[in-house]
Length: 125
Picture 1 (cartoon, rainbow, N blue to C red):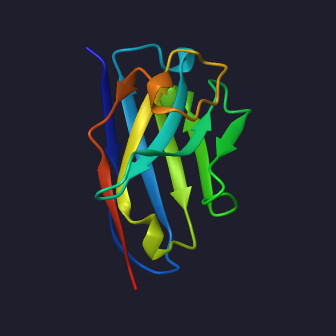
Picture 2 (tube, rainbow, N blue to C red):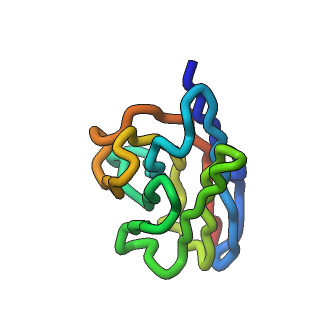
């Protein structure tokens, strides 16, 4: 059984930093590219960042480029999203997801196979 479990969300102030983690089990982790998406109330789920299986290629949404960093530790089956200079518009539920095309940095929801339940990030002004 595949499990994708996010953690690290919370309530922060504008300009603060936060690190999300995502632990994956039930699959061979380095067979998968990984991604982070987010969804604010009343809005569609949107791409945030993705990383290929070996961590050497990453992709970011323009809205987070330069502020967020995605990374992974294949020895621990974990992917991270380091977020800095947080803004109120970053408030959303953040979802971790796995893509069986391990060489891809996909940006569409439909490209991913497994999803976590999400972790809430709230940025207060």
